[in-house]
Amino acid sequence: MSIAVVGLGNMGGRIAKRLMQQGHSIGVYDADQKAVKALEALGAEPYGSLKTLGAAHDFILTVLPDAEIVRQVVLGKDGLSSGMRSGCVLIDMTTSTPAVTREVATILSQQGVQMLDAPVSGGVAKAEDGTLTVMVGGDPDVVGRASPILKAVGEHIVHVGDIGAGHTAKALNNLITATSLAITSEAIALGVKMGVEAQNMLDVINLGSGRSAASETKFPQQVLSRKFSPGFSLSLMCKDVGIALDMAHKAQMPASVASAVYELWKHGVAMGKGHMDHSAIALVVEELAHVEIKA
Image 1: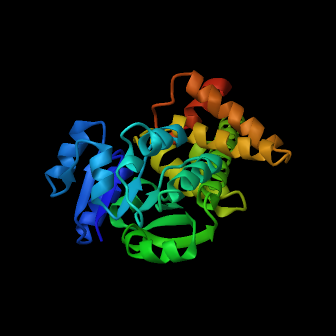
Image 2 (image 1 turned 180 degrees about the vertical axis):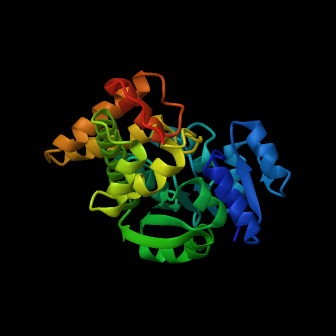
């Protein structure tokens, strides 16, 4: 089983490293040569072209910023598809759009290449220790073939449906995450304006029905501490909320809450905070409310 990883950013680099720790030989490619050299130093085999990498491996994982980059990397001139042979499997772990995923899968199938969409949840810490949640879309037989790879990086593997279903589930999961962070930020900011200390407000939320991953993890670790340690960026979360909202529009489903949440995240990007960790949405709320949320 020969494996390659394309895209060695916060998540892709850690996924590649985790696969190596599990005994797999890994080929790697990234436009950032510094990221490539870091993995090469750990024993990965670097590739200078996508076509060459595509021809050399049975399973190729793509962990990229967005759907358009996936389309270009896979289908563009001298992209992965120009080298991949019949029987290969592309596993796209990007948080992408279902429509593009199905488009890419259809084109690849014409040359006998199979595809899974397998985005992950859990962040960089869980990528490092192999305890991610992986939501997989695609043919069950292909999922079975890819199972050793998926289990090497994920503790929970959920086969959610046909191709594109993984990216659907991921976008909707991130919509909930973005909404929880936004409303928790607004609630605590309002509490502070009304004279309740932020830590006391957070204690009440976490002991009551309002608790969530946002209040239990993000707020104590990132917001009240004022760390906002770089991880999954605010701009990428904004992109994912946009994907979820676009899905709702295409399904002709009302999405009043998602629409309001999207406007706040877009405002955060417009304020120049897109490069920060997504927990920095609290800073956006602070600036709008003219109040500081801190311990």
